Amino acid sequence: NAGVTQTPKFQVLKTGQSMTLQCAQDMNHEYMSWYRQDPGMGLRLIHYSVGAGITDQGEVPNGYNVSRSTTEDFPLRLLSAAPSQTSVYFCASSYRDYNSPLHFGNGTRLTVT
Amino acid sequence: RKEVEQDPGPFNVPEGATVAFNCTYSNSASQSFFWYRQDCRKEPKLLMSVYSSGNEDGRFTAQLNRASQYISLLIRDSKLSDSATYLCVVLTSGTYKYIFGTGTRLKVLA
Image 1 (cartoon, one colour):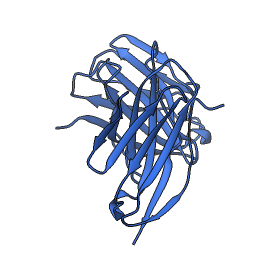
Image 2 (cartoon, chains in turn cyan, brown):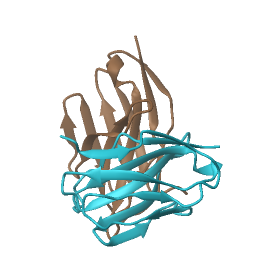
Image 3 (cartoon, one colour):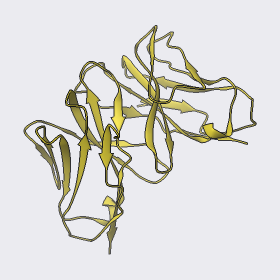
Image 4 (cartoon, chains in turn cyan, brown):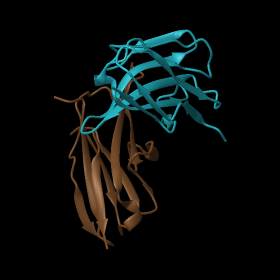
């Protein structure tokens, strides 16, 4: 029962470094998304995908790239990390169905110094 | 105006109390609604979906008021273990953007 798996759980980066946050799901969900959560701001949608080969921007896409080459994986790339990207990142997936709730991974805590 | 708004709380209630939270949404095309629970430093977990006719799951009751554009969550007989942040989520027809409220913090006191 893996569900949604995110790696790594913790990461510290220096300003300007790049990295990829990994997200994989084994539930055959068409829909996948990335959120960031900051104190007092709630979860904000970064990017989402309704299927392999399709991605779209959410509320706060700047500084992040995504791709969806397979149904299972939806990596999030930070091109040049900035302190403002210090946050907790959650990946979530669901069936492509308006009645389907999101299933979340355990999160990645990222600190950019 | 935020697309989904919640009172951040905290709501401090004694064990056994009944407590209710509201969540307002601004887009009249909103189609699907959910309540999630989030414990400190953990991922959100689905508490319940919200159906047009209202629905109940044990001590939890969710309702939807489309005319006034809000959903509500009622918790009866509060337990210490209910202490958490409750997030409402709205999915709008024509998009696949699940939009979250900032959450309402509940503390149940012994």
